[in-house]
Each structure stands twice: as structure tokens, then as C-alpha cells.
Amino acid sequence: MSEKPTIEQYKAKITEQKFQAYKCIGCGVVITPPSGTCYGCGSSDMEWIDVSGKGTLVSFTVIHIAPDDFADEAPYYVAIIELEEGSRVTCRLDGFDPLKPEEISLGIPVVLTYITEESGRTYLAFKPE
Ligand SMILES: [Zn+2]
Image 1 (cartoon, rainbow, N blue to C red):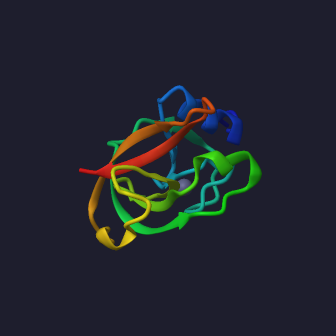
Image 2: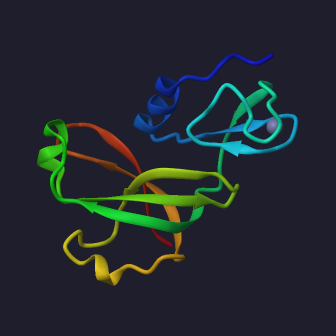
Image 3: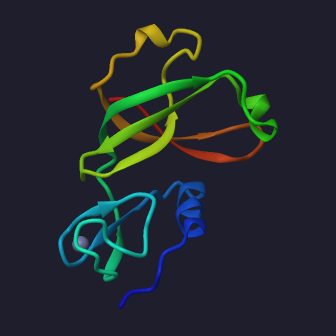
């Protein structure tokens, strides 16, 4: 049985700009963020994997009024991306004006990137391919 992953490991990989997903060795299901149990088959035999960094924009919203810790970063996009590997991730969306969401189309191809804010926090992000 492999070591149980933690959300802290997941966040650390993003901070280091080395985003990885978690893959079930048994059935191949890819999970992000990691879980101790496979959603596909219930196995706990899983491993970190590199991903292609390619995905599709599934949904997004603009955060205008952020929680206090993130207030300086608003407005910003939060998006759901379906990775080429099949898993969906919540992340930032880069490459678009947060005041012009009407310019964004769902279903567009996107690629992995990162956003580092003035606070020093680094976020997982995707931008148009
Ligand atoms: Zn599985």
C-alpha cells in the first residue's frame, strides 16, 4: 500500500510549480486533488504522476469580493478544468481580463500555468492554449 497523500503535499507541488495528479495503479483513474481512496475501484494503491498540462475549460466564475486573505487579489477567475487525463481541477484562469468574462468560451483548450500573486502565494492556473 502506498503512502497516503495529503492536501499539503498537493499544495506544495503547486507552490513549487510541479503540479502532479494522483493515479490509481489498479484501474488508472486520475484524481485531483489526491484522495486516499480511488473513486473508480476503491483501491488505496495509488501514485503521483506528471500530467500533460493540457485540459478543457468546463466552468468559471469571477471573484469580485474575496475572503479577507485574498481581497488584494480580486477580481480574479476561479475555473474548473477537465484535464486530458480525465480528472477535474479547481484553479485560477489566466490570460483573460477579469472584467470581461463575456470574452471567454467554455470548452476551449487550455494549458497549465501558475500565477504568483504579490502576497507570494502561487496558484495552479490554466490559460488559453
Ligand atoms: Zn482505481
